[in-house]
Image 1 (tube, one colour):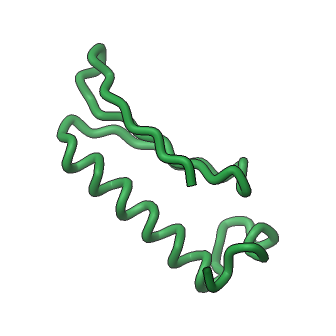
Image 2 (cartoon, one colour):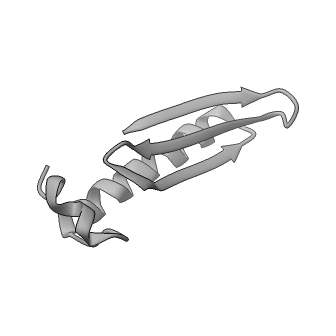
Length: 70
């Protein structure tokens, strides 16, 4: 997974994006004013993605072959 986190001075918010090069159409993004809230959102998103992969319940199941059980 590729996680990018940056602070937008214009918006005065922490912004983030999460993407997996093996799943180019599955991207998650978010923004929060508080750094710790942004990190919490990233943590919850990663945990959700990993749980879905383990269960085989991904949005695009055909992409799950290389990830299930890992």
